[in-house]
Length: 311
Ligand SMILES: *Cc1c(COP(=O)(O)O)cnc(C)c1O
Image (cartoon, rainbow, N blue to C red):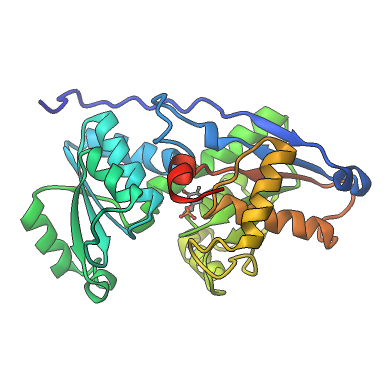
């Protein structure tokens, strides 16, 4: 019943780029554009979209080529990565196992409910064990329980994921004729940003906005860049987390509603609302010189918006 064909075809057609029009941009002579990866749906399926497509693309191809029929990965109960892996498994013919941090709560939240509906088998690990998940013994136990699996790390960030994200830079360069002065992206694990930094090869500044509380995101990205760590054309803003991961206070809700109204683009609550808020705030504060061009990457994340958050 599983596809025996060893090649898997995922073609990522370039997502559009939209320019935003606003008085403040005119006044400051700044061009602000959005790369619409939220519209990236290679399988024509709205639940497999955004940066998760770029991060999974080469992993899925590698898994198929090396004969795996099952993907096993890790995440929190609200993880977009878990949702994307479950959906990708359904779309491309892989069984999927999701190792979830914490205990089973019933009824399942919409993310896990849908992952289950997409055929993902869930395995819960208490928080202490979850922290040890990459230890060989824990991996071994999971593999003994579930059988041979292609393992994707929590959040899906690995070398192949960064390779997919690096291509985003080249795509933007082709579409605009050159790279903008700044590329901006939201950070969870930092894998998408690290890929972009590599893809830009020093030709533009890459700005990150961390969706998580804490100031360590820069170190995380330095670690991910590895031997490419001598790129210095990037920085992370850590002051726009709004209380931390998945926190969505009233001020941010209000901003998200206004952004949608003014520009006709729906930000997701966990990542891109914080990115757009942060970059617009930096524009107002004068961070960007007159004449600058900025492309903000809309990394998607909208698959759960309507049912988890009242926007
Ligand atoms: C997962 C996700 C991110 C974070 O990507 P990382 O590579 O983990 O930094 C950003 N935006 C959206 C919409 C996501 O779903």
